[in-house]
Length: 590
Image 1: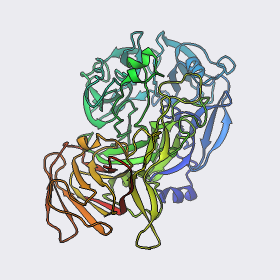
Image 2: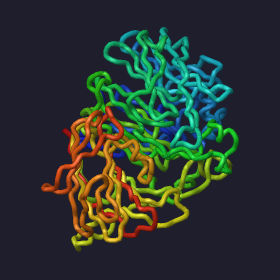
Image 3: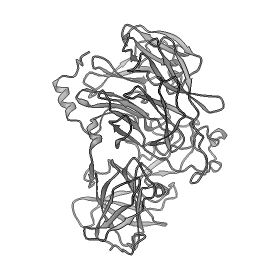
Image 4: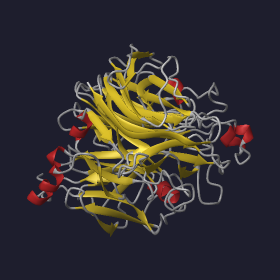
């Protein structure tokens, strides 16, 4: 069916979008409630004031209106390419209970059910119980292209706290369903730098994409440093043993999305959390949290990424931040907004559709304070350069610090598994009197902070070869800085980030570049140039200024994904109000 809402005005506006642009705030957490109708209408279902609602757009997501959902409708559905019926599998009664809705009043029934309408997404729905198991993280079912089959990845939490990673599949247009259970993902262990175990996710929130040859590829949320992956050659009936993928992520949801031309986009949080603390020294935690059956604090859910593949996932391009958490600096991060909407606050979890003019709309995040609807052009993922001189502030940077607080899950007061924040590294006037600001990275004593050292994190298009240029100034009395090039996000003040960097440069307070005899002058600007040709096998070359001697930087932690992050952090071991100044940065990939 033709998109009746994409007129010349809308097309003109869409053409102007390249980099991610926020266009709305969805009424529920992302991952299943976004729907693109055949005529081009876009809906995002959710809830408000204990009632199920949806917001709708008739201009390709550029503007939205709110409506109450008709009683008895299940909300988001997928349309069958074979019958045209609208279907959804979910325990809507359980869903309503989770979000404090009156399930009986809005016409929902208990049980994991298949909802079906042959008269449109607003038509009359029938429902049939599919299973006595209440599966979690149930996305919209995926119709396969290579055969007449629906598949639906999900998980089930067993009484012992482990998970059954499950795929449901149907060969009769979703009327009856079979299931298969995959092998369990290993448990996280308290091995250095960790002093305790992470929340144990034994394989949850899976996402599936069908490759060009009909093979299915599953990507899986785990407690490890990487998403795990599994493959099926028979349409989802049997699966390979899950193994680590190339994508870094911990306890966050991945989402595969296939474009009409066959390219695949992965949405995920390319992030690594802080090392786990000694849970026995966190008095707020209860036994089940200490033992890994719950989280103490999330520290890697502030950056949401995308990469694109043209060859069924053999190679990937981009690794760019699609969305940064707008609340990442908030001093009341844990408590703001209350818990009636959602206990979590993050930009993880996602769902996407393709729009006219080649654009992509993606719903991402949790809690109305943080979740957003974004439109971007996949061409943006192919860019090879980025630079910043702070003329637009720190909108593209993470410089926050964590404040000590209450650990653990919701226990009756607003907030859940989160640190409050405060701004860390700050912009200050240029010391040369120029009408501009520069970034100061220092250390200000504050016993309320988890870590006092300030840092700054900046993302750029990934490259296995490329160069980064940094204009920096050591202030007299400062204690120095560590500069790392990395393939993922680490928190600005993460003291172990250096161990996972591809390359690292350390300059002490006297200007001595670690491992060399070079001493930089204080209170003058220096240009640091770092070049690399193979982030998986080879050392990098660096120099200060165009005429400085060429130095070698050893490869610390090989990366097949390429480098996509600049991580700069104070190395002061005591108060350092002078710090180091950054005037501008630039990255170019080859």
